[in-house]
Length: 298
Image 1 (tube, one colour):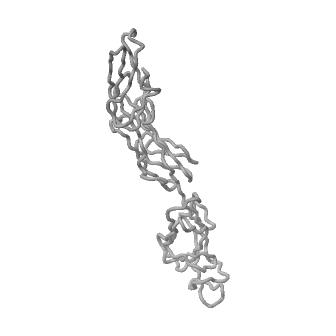
Image 2: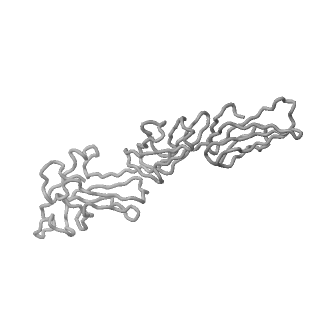
Image 3: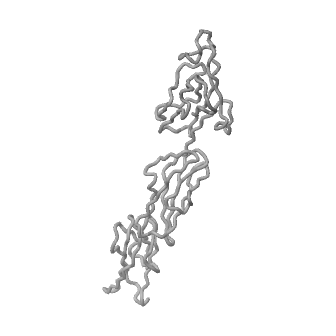
């Protein structure tokens, strides 16, 4: 038998068993290993008649086994202590693919079965993905938060070790998503402050004696709108929703599909990514003067 019990082995892994016959002069008999207790099917490799086989089981739980030795019609047997077969599974998120924003955290969680195999150590690691992954508060936490520093698809693994036995599980795809809104002529570092500017569209570019801001259709010669660029990464994302809204100052602006107005984009506007594409560029028109700096926020 193994040198001490309880003994531990990961689901799908092997535990070496061994037996000692005393006295050695009683050799040349036959061995037979069998399961005594346990929830699953036990395999002894290379065979149940080997004096020192490997043990494995197809279900987690607590097992005992017996070795019987037969010589000339006489038998002797010994029953093991508890062998705990354990598995670890990623159970949070509950389904994959899972999504998280760039710079945000996604909660991960794991379940150990059976709980009696507790007291070991966890290690989380990145399996695939383009960037650096951080597990918080540490890679040894059973239920850490995941974050990554680059957009893309990732998979992660949790490994649990008890004594010298290990079990692991690999996640489905975790997609790290970035949504970006850029203002024409404004550097990224200036988008929050001082931001961009658009004047009230009080001229008459098409010379029809109507202020351009009061027109709802296409305005020939219109040149007073400010363009904004929208992007979602990865570009292959084909589920979920994208939403554009003015969190302040919505009555001060209008948003259009064209630089010459035409079709208005009524805010808040939501795009279903499974069937719609987010436009790469939209155009902002000033219709009422702001009474404070950065009054309008998209």
